[in-house]
Length: 178
Image (cartoon, rainbow, N blue to C red; front, side, top):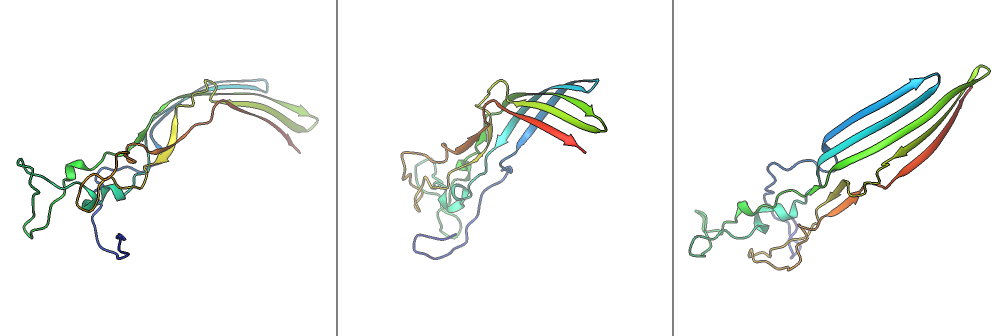
């Protein structure tokens, strides 16, 4: 880690039980489909949850955690006389709000001589659920100074950068196979 004086030093990242960010850990889908005489209709329901954001190591460096205090309010020291930091104050990983999305596809395949033409209209997020988080990241700023004291009134860790799903979307696809 690079310190304020421009020198590098070793530190420990306390990141036990952190998860990979950017993908939902729970994703469920059901498709109701009708295909007959060249027509196809699909109605697809998707549910996403447990969407973890990318965590920042800076807020989990051992030296950036607040100092461990005893019942009297005194800083606890290790066997070498160094102040100990409170690993119970390691922040939990930020998560995004999951939710339900409904998609639909309607199309027709027709033959023109020996060639096939397909027309397909696809609509995504028909319910216009724009609260569904697709990913994001915690902000890379410290809350505590080198002595373990709070230095900010605004907590960047509790205000992560989040990305949200687009609203209702659609596309028309026309294909012609020779």
